[in-house]
Amino acid sequence: MPKISAPSVAEHRAAQRAALIAAAEDIVRESGVAGVTPRSVCERTGLSRSSFYDYFPSKDDLLVGVAIAAIESWDAEIEQALEGVAPGLAQLRIFVDATMTMTADGRHEIAGALRGADLSPSRLEDLMVLHDALLRPLVHVLEELGHRSPQRGALLAQGVIGAGVQLVTHGVDPQEAADDVYALLVNGLA
Image (cartoon, rainbow, N blue to C red):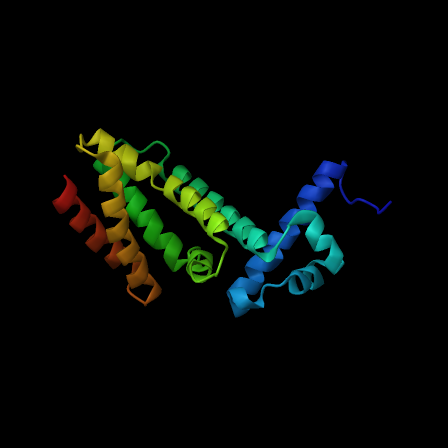
């Protein structure tokens, strides 16, 4: 039986899985999705290639694992930024500012790289469900503002925010992009 490097087998497995995800994330940043293979991530983690399949049934499942980790991290940072902020427009402002800052800091890179991944349709659907969960704060803001259809409004707002993200990734100052996005959202939604 192989040695484990954690207090329990479950913790060891969780650590190994996390190491594979971290390695895949690094590879995506360095060489894109095409560079992610069972062999490349196992070489980085020191695991045997056959061990890969103990944690992920396929490359698609690993890439979804990378996306889930990125989405969960993004969501946690947004929630932390919104903590204690008055509901309504103040939360919208913080949400927009945090999104543009996080994008400028490179935390949106993984999403951009994975957007072009050729995932199986079922795995792509899993990702879309998770991505839609990121709309929660926007839906909440629009509910607080009395918007007649908060879910639909959040989808529309996400389009404007996504355009702001694109501006930042193309070199626009994140605060300028946040100011423009916020102004457009407030004038169009409030």
